[in-house]
Image 1 (tube, one colour):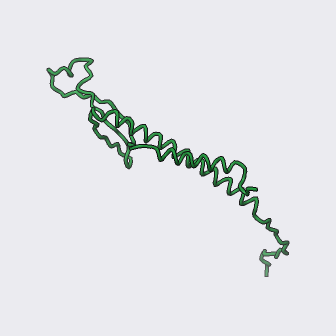
Image 2 (spheres, rainbow, N blue to C red):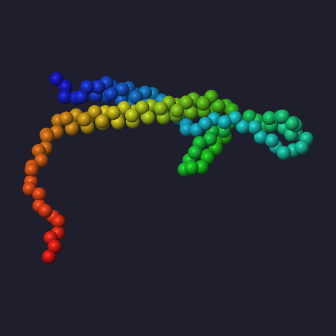
Length: 136
């Protein structure tokens, strides 16, 4: 007979599956991939014409670091690899949130189990002392 609360084994299994899934992830990179076009500023260039998108695309990965946006330029040859790395990061982020949630539920079940198994404390009925000050 198991002393574990109902559902604990299911949560443990889920936790182990999430940990295994995290272990299968490849290289990861946080951020967003952005396609960027720029105008060079030369009045006779094709990018100066009305409606022209400009020079590009240039691919950038942007992310926040300590409250500031950090941008890295990505070569076109590494575009698919970078997309894959960003997808791996998003998967890792989702799995880590699920792992924390699952382990929080495990901890809650264990706490309920501990409370249920704790001995019942009996309060003794003590005589109360009158603590109000007496007038002199």
